Image (cartoon, rainbow, N blue to C red; front, top):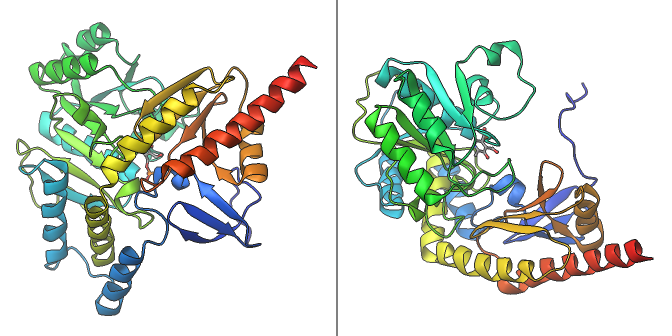
Length: 381
Ligand SMILES: Cc1ncc(COP(=O)(O)O)c(C=O)c1O
C-alpha cells in the first residue's frame, strides 16, 4: 500500500534526537529551530521524560475514561500551578484541532448560539469546525457549512459590530498567530476583545496550541495582557511529541456527563508525558530561558541586512523577507544543518525547543548572515 501523499517533505530522515539536536540516518547533526511544528518544548529524548513514559508503560499504558485515573488529577494540579489558572478545570484530548472542536461544542452548549468569529491569518486545525475558522482558502463543503465570520486582527470596531448581534457562541484567537506569519495581537485589542465578549456573553477561546507552554517566555502568550479567557486550548508542546491536547475551562461552565468525550484523551501514558514536560519546564527554568534566548536571538536577527522584519515573542519568531524563502530554508537545512519552518511564502518561522542556548542561536544567525551575504553579492554582480 502506498501512503496518501499529502505532506511536502525534505529529503532528510531523522533517526536520533538529543536536546535541540537531531541526527539523520547518515549521522549528520542538525540544530532544530523548528521543533517539528513547535512540538518540542523540553528538547528531544529528555532522559527524565523517557524514563517516566517507559516506567508507566511497564505498569499500565492505557485504560479508558470509564475508570478512575488519579494521574489526570495530579496532572491538572501541576498545570494549574504552572499556568496560574488554579480555579479552571481541565478536559484532556489528543490534538489541537480536537481541543478547538471541543471548545466550540462547549461554547455552543453554554450560549445556545452557533456562530463563531475568527481572524484573518488564523489557524486552528484541520477538523471540520476548526478548519472552517482557519484562514485557508480550500474548504470542502462539509467544512463550509459552519457559520463563521472572519475579521482582521486588531479591528475592534468590526468585532464589536458583530458581537453586539448576540448571535455568536464564541470568538477564537491565537495567543500569537503562528501559521499565518507570527503576528502578535495588540495587547489593547486583546483586552478590548475580552470586554466585548463579556458584555455580549460570547465565549472567548484563546488558542494557545502553538504559543503556549512557555514558548513566549510566559506560560501563555495572552499572559502579557490582563485578560482571563473563558477557555484556553492547548496541545503541541504539552506532550513534547506524545499526542495530547486539552482545554482549560473557566468555573462559569458546568459539565454534565456525556457533554464531551474521547477514547484516548487523558490516558495513562499521555498524563505521565504531560507531567514530565511540566516538571522539566519548571526545574530547568525553561520559560526564563525562552524569554532570554528569544530576546538575544531577536536582537541579533534584527541586525542582519536582508531581513525585512523580525516579529514575535520569546522563542516564537517570524522573519519576513522581500523574496520567497523556500530556497533559503532548503539552504539552511542542507548546507548549514538548521531546521526552520515557513509561513506562507515570505516568512521563516523559528520555533526551537525551549532548551536552546545562545551559542545555538549564534549558529542560526551565522548561517543566515552567510547565505544572505551570498545572495546580495550574486544580486549585485
Ligand atoms: C494555533 C494552532 N491551533 C491548532 C492547531 C492544530 O493542532 P493539531 O495539528 O494538533 O490538530 C495548530 C497546529 O499547527 C496550531 O498552530
